[in-house]
Length: 290
Image 1 (cartoon, rainbow, N blue to C red):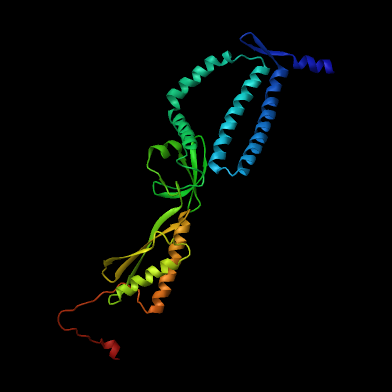
Image 2 (cartoon, helix red, strand yellow):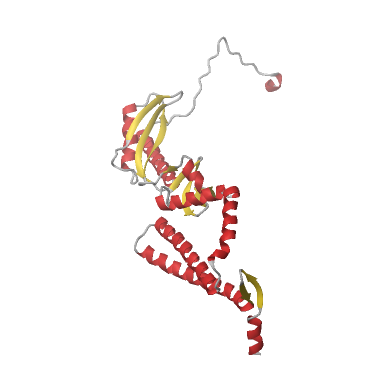
């Protein structure tokens, strides 16, 4: 039985460039690929684990992992061909056809592929950065070879082609640091002491735990509105995502409203005065008199 199995495995199936391939060699190819891929995953996991232990950033680990996979797959491919005694010249025609196909039909894919490597190497955008692209805001979760995955503030995932991030204007809120300036506007009723209002607003901003002391918060008497005196307080915070900014502004509005209530400052609301020319006569209908 062993001899029959050996004869079956050595059966020649086809030939390429005077090189004959047996059934055993063809069965060995998937085995080599499976074992090689398993080994590559284990080594990649071990290497990235040790790299994270050193305190490397997420985008550096991601770049290292990408380069490691490409090199390892290249070594696995060449090793498999070497075991099968297949010369690389056998793929000359195939590589030429693939190159022509890429040149005519895959320009966009190649553009995104190269752009992805530029993003990972130059790092104008890193994993964890908070971006604003075409009015959408979100955090970068992954930079892949074709597209970048962003999780918007509403939880929706966006896949943006890498070339778009390089060719268009992108706002990176956290490129250098998390320092961000924001503001809160409030309107008070006419007749209010404007200097007292400014003091209350700036005091609320200065006493907030997340508002930076330097640069100092600044209050601006912005405008005489239709129904209110408009004040705006400008302040700086360290915020990584849009949610942080909204929460800080909300907390500051609570503080300002409470301080106004204690100081008996009235927050304005829309009012309209009606002027009537002539006499106003009010009559009652017959049904109402009965």
